[in-house]
Image (cartoon, rainbow, N blue to C red; front, side, top):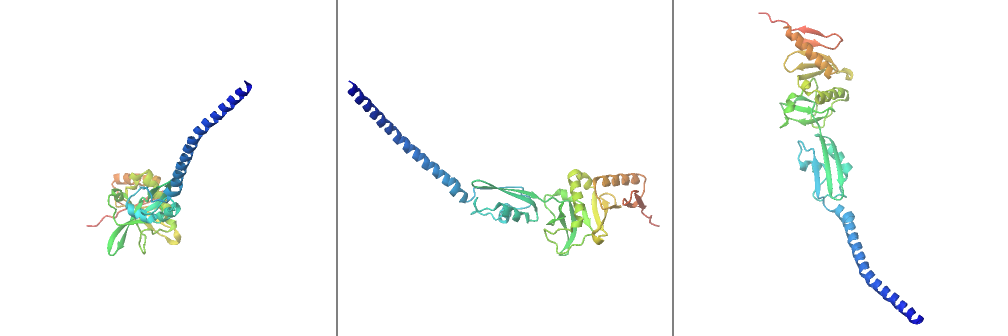
Length: 276
């Protein structure tokens, strides 16, 4: 009985091992198949897909530029891939475009490129002679001339102050004004952002006395032919005080020719009456 019991137990163990083997064999095949599929997906995802042509190039901030021009400047075409696009080089190339202040290029794995463009905003204009024609040119807060000629769909350009007293040579987009003028453009940018209604009251800003990089400003209000000397600063406080005093003097019936705010005490000159 003991012998038979031992034989029976051994047979049962053998049968169990056989059943386990039958179960493990298809499971092993399934695991191998899944591993092959996963490996193939990983090879496609990380090895093949990034080298394929881009699926999408998303451009934000197009203004005054065509999509084709931006892509060409960034060095992206129909054959470009995630791997072939150099984001830093594309940003540098786009930043050389006169209309663009800053460009950010982001690569989204595995096949998408995002380009975010910050365009230059005009804070002042100037009138220059080009081929015998008086043509407006536009400057941004950094004193960069970024556009020549009237801009369609930009009604706000009509409210920009016109700079005079500057001498231009070899006019072209991308021209930068001298560094000593940058504080003026920084103040104009502050006015554009914080008090655009005040900036729109100025018709002209005349720059004079630029000897040794020093200069003085005179402004002409839009609706009053008065020359107003303001020194070197065209900030919000100065302009509000200037316009307030101008209104007070006008209400008194004074025919003003000039106002001078270059000292602590404002002075004025009355327009001479015409004889006869």
